[in-house]
Length: 214
Image (cartoon, rainbow, N blue to C red; front, side, top):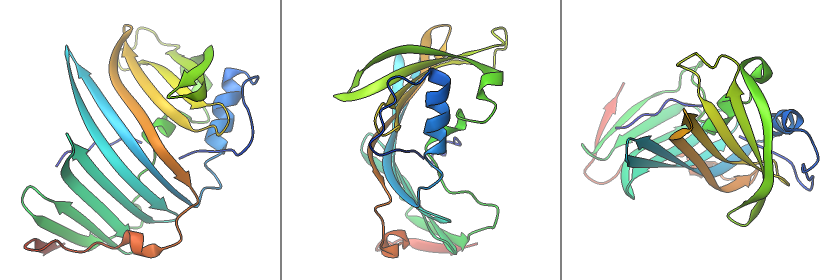
């Protein structure tokens, strides 16, 4: 089971084509505060030398603690994690086992990983540069570059971020090392505050699967 530890968005009817890049990022982060539920697909691409590897996550969230996260590689199901707020089911299809345990108080819901960068002290870590206004998949976007102040810190990367100009939804993030892509995150099929049925957050044990209780 591949587990990627990384660390949603938003506005209706507001166009951020004139705001400076720092204001744009701050407004983008603030838009997630009122989100009660969210669905999206997160596509994570690793660039390793001349090779790439892509992992796709299909995520459904409902505050404060309900979620479903399905992981696929090359369209093949690799794992599924579901929580109804009390119980967590973790399904590993390779061994056809479902691990079942209680949700812990400190456990966090999955979130779009792109928001890990949009912190209160982002300007202390990165220099924020407006790149251009353009389009991505026929959507009007603002492109922003984040460059670390500590250029000699090998743990710091440059980032390019594409943000929907109207909804303030982050659509793409690219991590760069010496100008070369290392990792790309793309987001598709965002749907906000649309989930009313809690049955989305129950898990039916597949036929023949074993259940292991923690």
